[in-house]
Image (tube, rainbow, N blue to C red; front, side, top):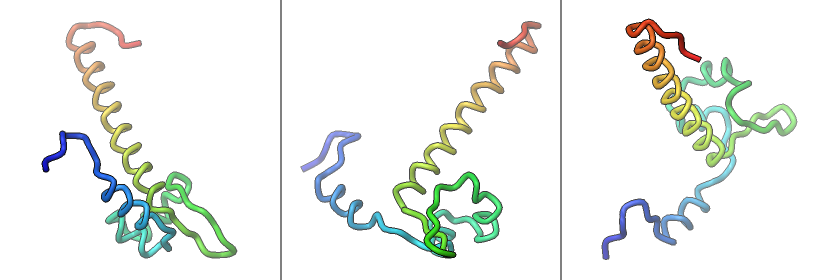
Length: 94
């Protein structure tokens, strides 16, 4: 049976919940397709928890962070488009 677009099955939700666990920096690097160095350089941006000296990442928080990054880029594109149109039309952007 086909599900309507945008619908998620209970089985998919349960599978996601089972896969949402804490991972270390190396696993986060692979999960995000970023180098460990990039994760270290952006440690103030990427959601993480510190347990003793170990830094851990929750997959659901990483997913939310990636979504936020995508949304920010989209907002930046809209702002750039507004500025370009304003420049061509000789207006100031508020």
